[in-house]
Image (cartoon, rainbow, N blue to C red):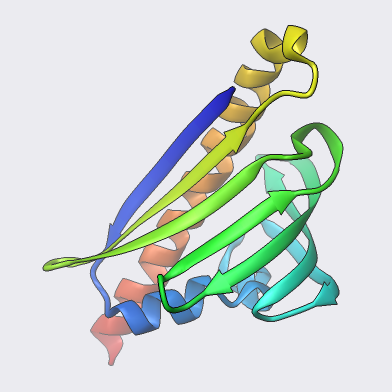
Length: 150
């Protein structure tokens, strides 16, 4: 089992934070390391989405089932292809006095457990450990800059 967490505190209202971070179609405009997000089926609250990003100069791509739940609030992804097939990703939002705390939680049970010692550092540390923090810090910069300018 691979488990990673990335989190950040964003000093902005929950409505703005959730609206921006849950608008998948705008991620490539917001996030410099994202190449594209394409709806294969459904959208914008749920469906199947193809996402592509860069890990440094290395292109990565995956297909996920996606759900957006504004009532919780939470985003949920389940990877449907490649080495990360079956990985569940949850974006968990908590209101704090100083802003919104977001945690991105990744969990993957490896389909080939014997490969876990190799796959865990590559998928968990090298890929997710690079992309998720950049995603959160990019949203933080955008939302906190927007707040100052308002």
